Amino acid sequence: MNVEPKRNYRDTLFKKIFGSEENKHYLLQLYNALNNSNYKNPNDLQLTTIENIIYVTIKNDVSFLIESEMTLYEQQATYNPNMPLRGLMYYAQLYQEYLTGIKRNLYSTRLIKIPNPNFIVFYNGPKETEDEVEFKLSNAFITPQESPKFEWTAKMLNINKNHNVALQKKCEPLYYYVEFANRVNSNIKKGLNAKQAMTDAVDYAIKHNFYGDFFKKQKSEVLNMSLTEFNQEEYDREKHDDWFEEGRIEGEKSGIKKGILETAKNMLKDKLPFDVITKYTGLSLAAIFSRNQGLASATLSNTKWSTDYAIFTGSLREFSRHQRIYLEKPCSLKHE
Image (tube, rainbow, N blue to C red):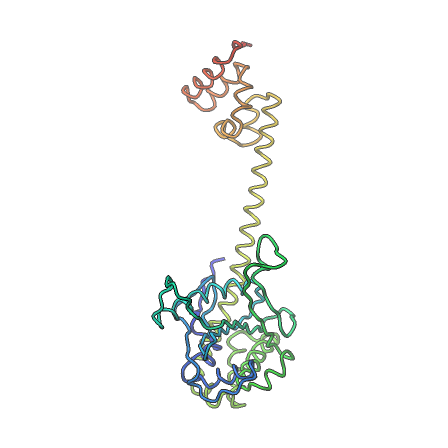
């Protein structure tokens, strides 16, 4: 499949609503709802989102600093247990930027204090999940440990319809976002194409005054963002299918090749002529000898085999080399 990605990862609706300077009051409401805090001033939040950074397809949605906490919010339409690893890689970049900003040297002999990490994933994909799921990096360790020496977590909150209802009631901006996404999904299930589904959802948001006049003023931009997000999700799914199919084909090829090589080896053991082996395995004589040098050399006690080899390869040098190998053995050549 020749599907090209169409999304600029920076330009998502979630980021536009919660991650822009002009909408920091929405982000503050979301933070307060999640942490049972009561901050009033949006300027208490310092956006730290790193532009133009993608790590292992992680979308750079919203990150911010408030007092002693570095928070990262990600919206996901795909269930992904690899979020702790992706978050860890992203936080490494965030902390690097933080240290640069406060002019601290990582190699200093003094302990450098850093903000506490707080990684939240807002999930609104099709897979059924609990309201809250905690992913742990240790679950990905090759060797499981009862008490991991290092841990990193990601909390995933299901924001689909009828999930985390109390949170949505506490945060109107999140409720609007969920309602908009639900409207889109519902329209697609009814058979509308992507553009129709998005347009109807935007009109619904305007009619019900979601985010004031945000949707009305930026209807075209919102439609473009929503459509490109939708297309990217399609691309991700199709690309995943491509990788899976390619892996399956390669696996089959690998298995078949191993079987052919094993067949050639068994035919050598039975001292079948080289022309028979190459005919029925499709392998070149060079491949047979490279994979079974010891066995092939041992079977060269039959002069006809060496003659076959020279004829099939057209190489007198190879013929002489194998004859020399045999002549160096204690016994003499046997001629048929």
